[in-house]
Length: 357
Ligand SMILES: *[C@@H]1O[C@H](CO)[C@@H](O)[C@H](O)[C@H]1NC(C)=O
Ligand SMILES: *[C@@H]1O[C@H](CO)[C@@H](O)[C@H](O)[C@H]1NC(C)=O
Ligand SMILES: *[C@@H]1O[C@H](CO)[C@@H](O)[C@H](O)[C@H]1NC(C)=O
Ligand SMILES: *[C@@H]1O[C@H](CO)[C@@H](O)[C@H](O)[C@H]1NC(C)=O
Image (cartoon, rainbow, N blue to C red; front, side, top):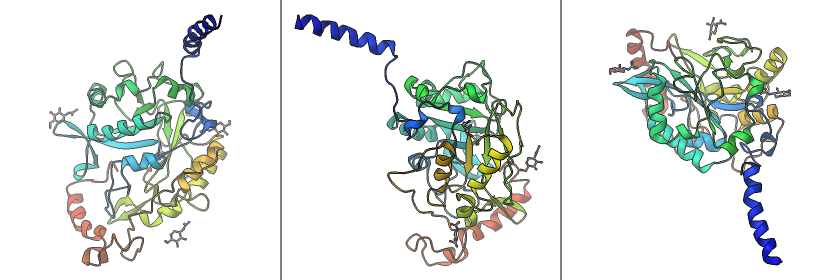
């Protein structure tokens, strides 16, 4: 009798779990409330030029590398892909100005993080600067094993409300969503998703703090596309756009003129919904404020287990963020930035170096 019940139970359990298709995620991107929400109804924080990491350098937009970015809560990684003698390489504007290494080694770090964090969905936004074919990206994704973790939508365009829930993406193991600005081809590589027929963007490289929520680039129906705000402030250095770490704590903050929080409110007023993606520079400036803004937009509470690290870039010769990392020598007095300017100026004469910033 007892044995029969045990046999029946052991037969029943696998059938039961198969019928409910296995694991059910209970925490999704850090919050249980997000599991049942459509990917298209969530606000994610993104790192603009996520591979362009360096301190007080005119060509870098982040102080911390991709692994730290992901640890702290960045869930969209934006990058510029360039052709460096046939290899897909992550460079800023040009590989001679800033070379952030190969796409393959970068994606290897992303893959390691995704493997260690099975309850998270991560998005990539690739700027296909030199027109590599989707099949060439596919070769790199396959080499690091990210092809099998990639989400392929059922068709080339997906309206915002039709995206699956975060929980179902996590359950299916398809936890990487990749968008590409130009050259995507659904019939060739379905997981490389055409950006502008699925997502619109606000203006980028702005140098004033207005941060409106108007459509700047799109190739689709903006009422049903996902949308991304470019919330990073540039400043003009010798007539060219450059990142602005001096103002990043204000730019990234929760409220006030030019803040991330204020742009989200502008979007809710103008578009009737929050942005899906918010690209920021120097994400840790503000002490986690960018994640606070996302949590508020998502209706959850930001309560990190470890605080974000302190900023590294100062951008000013008088900054005092860290006495240990700033040796008292000529370079720190003037700032690396000032030493780079003459080099940048001569390169700019070679032609429009900031054209694709
Ligand atoms: C990349 O550059 C190499 C030469 O260095 C060239 O042979 C190749 O066609 C280029 N690839 C693309 C996609 O333009
Ligand atoms: C998009 O924004 C740029 C500034 O980043 C501006 O020069 C351009 O006119 C805008 N285009 C549209 C269509 O709004
Ligand atoms: C930004 O940093 C400056 C200088 O470190 C400080 O005076 C200011 O209060 C900060 N603003 C915010 C919004 O954190
Ligand atoms: C998600 O839906 C809620 C309710 O309609 C809305 O307030 C919020 O702005 C939406 N968020 C996004 C990113 O679409």
